[in-house]
Image (cartoon, rainbow, N blue to C red; front, top):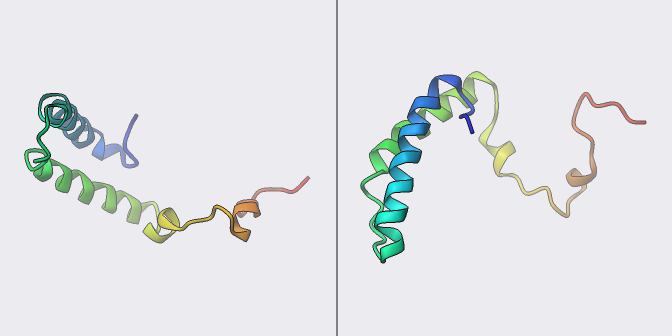
Length: 82
C-alpha cells in the first residue's frame, strides 16, 4: 500500500522493511526494543504530516471517533441523498 503522499512512498517502504525485520527477528523472539526503526519512523511521520497539510487533511478528522455518534450516520459532504 502506498503512503498518503507520493513523495513519502520510498520512506514508507524503508520503514516497513525495517519494521518487518524487527518484528520477525526481535519482537517475536521476546525483545520489545523498537528503537532500531524509530529514526526511520520519525522521518516518514514528518513526511506524512507534510502531505496531510498539503492535502488539507486535519489530524482531528482522522482521530475523531464517529462510531455510535450522529456523525456515523451522516453522508459525507458533497454526496447526494437518494
